[in-house]
Structure formats: structure tokens, C-alpha cells
Length: 338
Image (cartoon, rainbow, N blue to C red; front, side, top):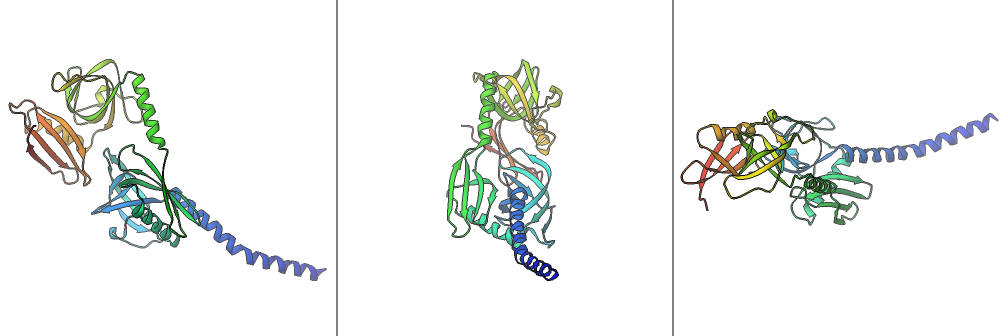
């Protein structure tokens, strides 16, 4: 009897010894795949002192940079396709792409992550959809990698790229953009609520019963509401010259300049930032008597640009004003007013 028991124990130990290593390896592989999908973010592009992740350029000049294995690396070791864990200040300037600051960048440098990183890089280099933004990991298996990304525009088309890791067969197809559809539904609802149009720009002047936002003088409707991007209520006193806002309004009248409109809801997108102080300085520095912003946009290197006209000058010259929020430097160039 004792002999039979010993033989059974030996067989059991042999079975466990033979099977356990592979099983543990399989579990580890699955867990690593899930870890990357849930936590890793993709560096889409790099430039001097910044990385493009999701839809934001993050400055890494002050960031701690390292690897998951504890190695010390530099910004030069970060490249398109790299998988990283990213910590930021949490503040992102409203623009496209956004502007933010990273505090820690940790590169996944294990063998599995490096293999997936190479596969991501292959997709970025070979995808046929033109200029894209915001690639992210969707699914990883032994045989394939799936990532999602968007066309390079706000609320643009969404795509799914599937790469066969064995033979590098790449397939890309358009898929449903849930965020864009949700935004469309919200805009349609805004129309039903008599918020007929949306207009985004800077507050440049406080009027007796309204605000000037870029080239439109808005008068408050008696039922006007003030909110932040989360939908939380604000007060009129929470807004100031220089704030970046979205105005929900009626059709504007173009018979006079600045144009006229009725404001139903004002949403504060950005305030108390260097850009706020800069826009405020345009109206208070004395360089312009009464500037009206005609257009505003964000350039990729972090420079904000506005086209303005001084409506108090006899000759209505147009000016291009560039402001770099990193250096605080501003340039003004006069252009023909056609």
C-alpha cells in the first residue's frame, strides 16, 4: 500500500512539474497583454522637448524619464511607437492638438512591450489613412495587434487597424466614432433648446449687457445660463476678459461691425492661464485702441496666433499677433486688409 502511494505522489509531482511552467507563462503573457491595453499609452510623434500622446503635445523638459526595469534613459530614447506610462500636471490648454506638461515618462522596456512597440510603429508608418492622431491599444493576442486612431481633425473619422503579428498583414477600416455622434446629439439638443449656433473665441470686452467674443457683440438673453465644460453652473462674475469660451446664440446680424447676436448660454473653456493674461494685454497694453479678434488658432510648436483689427483706427489695418506661451514672447505683423 505504501509503495502504491509513493508511486502516485511521484506521478503527481511529475505532472505538476511538467505542466506548471507553461501554464504560468501563458497566464503571465495574458496579464501583460491586459496591462499594456489598460495602462500603456502610445507616443505618436516626438519633437524637440515634447511628445505627442493621445491628442496632446506634452512638454518633457522637466519630466522624470526612465523605464519599467529602472534604467535611466533620456528623451532621445523615446520615439514614435514607444509604449509609456505617463504622468502629467493635469492641465491641458484648449487647442488642437492640446498643450500639456509631463511630470514622469516611464518606458515599457520588457521584451513583450518592445515587440508590441515595434508592431505599433509598423502600423503608424504603413497605415493608409493619411495624417492621424490619438492612436491607442485596443487588443493584443499572440497573433494580432489591434489599435484605434482618428483622422487629424476635431471629431473626425475613427479607424481600427488590425496587424497580423506573424506575417505583418495590415487591415484598416473605418468604425463608429461614439464621441462624435454623442457631440452631434448634444448639438441637436442645443438647437431644440433655441441655442441655434455655437461660437468659440476669447472675451475681449465687457459690454453693458453682454460680452464681445472675437468679432461678435453678444447681448445676454433674459434666461441666459453660465456653465463650465462639465455642465456645472457658473455666475457672470466668474467670467473675465481673456477667457476662452463657447457661446450658444441666435443667428448673428452682420449689418454692423462687430456683428450682433443674442447669447443664451456661455460655457467657460479656459480661464486664469497665460493665454488669458495675454489676450487681456492686447486690450490693455495701449498698442491697440480697441482690437477685435477676427480669427484665432494654435500652431503646433505651442504658439498661439490671432488675427485682429483695430476698429478705432481710421485705416482698418489687420494684424497677425503670435504669442509663445513657453517663452512669453509676442510678435506683431501688419498685413493687407483685403
